[in-house]
Length: 408
Image (cartoon, rainbow, N blue to C red):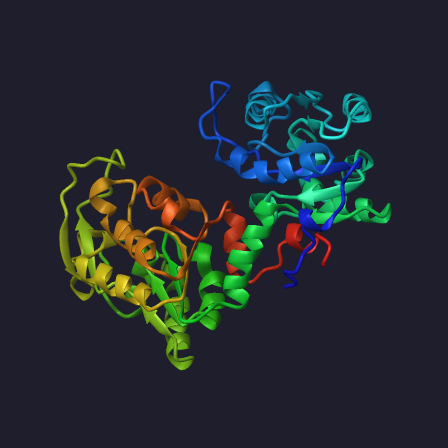
């Protein structure tokens, strides 16, 4: 995968119209933004383009937009928060057509350093479909250059992510990546393509099926692969152990056997839980702190119990493996981390990462939520902003949003 991409530092935008694809897919409650992390993450790129005298046109999706355009999924609250953060007025084009006459007029009236925000790109159904060519062209017609800074959407070949670049390029414009995208490429991309060794990868979460290709790819790239979370029980079953009522994917037992054999054949260390925290049944509500637990060795699980976290011996085993590493990538919690009683395994791994001198990369999704929730976020080298995009990067897949940017 070509990872040496043109960035906002490599283009001259003075007096030019720059379309920037951001990830403003923020959580909303009653029209109010409950977490503006993604808005803050976009500010360095936006401020750089403003300072360089660009005319900055921002676009993003928000929500899934299942039932057509609606005010609940409008980007109006984002425009308001952005204006506060930038300390200048962001001109929001509320038109559901996104690139219609209102957008054209707003862009025509722009001066250097002005900022316009277009309406939710998914209000145009064509954003996500194969026939999004007209929409791609209309977006490109508004701008001279294009910057992609939405890593969380970069695994989708959407009009505003990849389609638009073809038309920008046709008219001699630049297609670059923003600071956020650059950071993801530097950390995630290079960790997988060219890691400083020893390279330890940690995979958790509920399902083996979600991480099939990641397991396979990382076994070729890393020195040690650590498995935890719900997916570990399918691996334990593959070793012939009883796993009781634990999460199990019967259809993937043979695959797990293959992976265990592959690790052995390639001289890679594959670490599985040696003990497990048992519960009678899944907590309801999920954060019920009164849940009763017991700990047994991984090969002594009773048939009527369910594994819900890694035990003390496994925590030490995994922490010791992390201590030897120079690069660590972690995707997926070690147990039901939403419950305080069942969060100890995830906490132990997060603590081990926080205390190491290695480059530590958290691959988005639940792992990012876990390190934030447990208070270790500021100790990590990089926390990815993409869930699906991070996983596909770790699989070694080419991401349309990365591929579409100009090489240096």
